[in-house]
Length: 201
Image 1 (cartoon, rainbow, N blue to C red):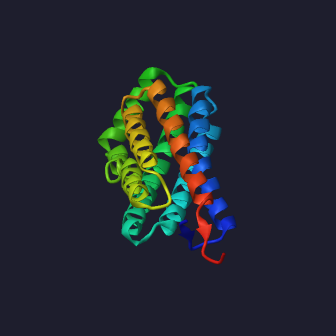
Image 2 (image 1 turned 90 degrees about the vertical axis):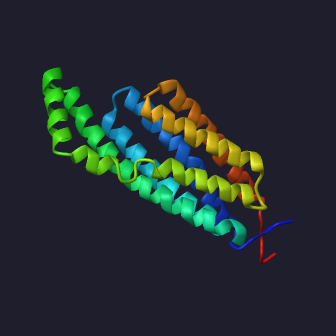
Image 3 (image 1 turned 135 degrees about the horizontal axis):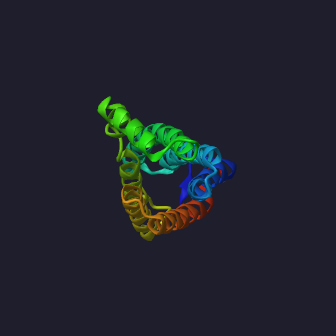
């Protein structure tokens, strides 16, 4: 039986964050699909926060051999979350303009202006892939941790890679498939965290 450094209540909170993160991400994409742009951005930013908190909570539970992967992964997830938060604000701005009274030519001109002034490059490039890379590093920690199963790490890797591809293409089917995989991986991790016994027992 493996033992946890924190109470069952603390582990329940970490599990809740881990499970809520991909669900909020899915909600954000559904809301965006139906043109609820402000609500979509809000759900997306909340998802990023839950991913960051859940990642550090998970890293705290790792044994020494997996701890460094947990901390590195959580740090990369945080860096990526900051970038994606900025990206979501830019996307909200563009969505509101494109669904307002602006013509396609106006939107094209705006994108050209932003591109030539290197605004988008400044936001996108420095940590564009830090978020999925952080999930991949976390999956190594999960693989090495004694209280979880190896297949959870494989699921998390697959979800992170598919989600990255879906964002680049973009592909809505890939997006929902990746989010379903991330949800299953998060749920299974949460279950094993709850089964992790308390040291005080």
